[in-house]
Image 1 (cartoon, helix red, strand yellow):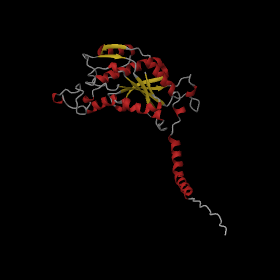
Image 2 (image 1 turned 60 degrees about the horizontal axis):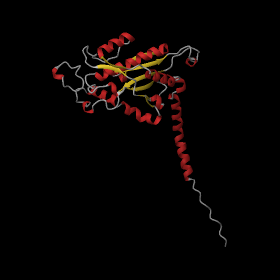
Image 3 (image 1 turned 90 degrees about the vertical axis):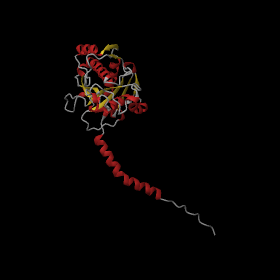
Image 4 (image 1 turned 180 degrees about the horizontal axis):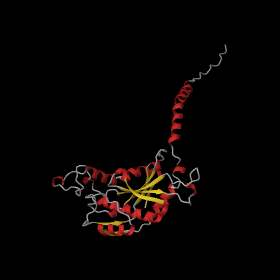
Length: 284
């Protein structure tokens, strides 16, 4: 007797499982998509012109004239008289008889970092910030600059020189002011807020009136790798005796001061890890 061909068993288990997963996940996915739409930033609109301004700022900084070592008192007096800008030295200010000198050279590297590069800004942010790191060249520093505020004085002088040049070149197209990085009074940064001009039609709001861009650019100086001896940056080390008047406190530890220096020394590690894959690292 001729046998009928065996019917192939078709299992629908896999398909039903997939369908079940999709059905289960769909509400969550849809809700997530809706939430993202509410917080996502329209970068083309909210940060219109940011890339062009970043490139212009970099070129302007690159064009600042270098100068050799000048005694800090003379350099401060000359700079503030010429540019009418108060150098944002942290307290205590440099002593009049301070023996060290200040100089200026072009940054060794530039990095645009933060949520602007990673596209992780939130629309609710009032002031959307774009951070540009400028790495000061190692030739500006001396062996003992980790002591007694010396690095922070050099850093303040450096950002003041950048501010003077950008204020002159950007003119009325931007407002400039000094702020402190994360509220740390040792670390002044330069904040640049673009201002709408009649030559910029893209700055008009929906009602036809001129509106200033919703973002600021922060210029943040940092130290080069290895400029500070690591053995002198431990929490128990006394790196700043300028604020200690009591003999008993002459050897007191300065953990906050030391950790701030250490963070400056390793800033490049926190930026290059991301920028190496995104092409944001830009050597001078």
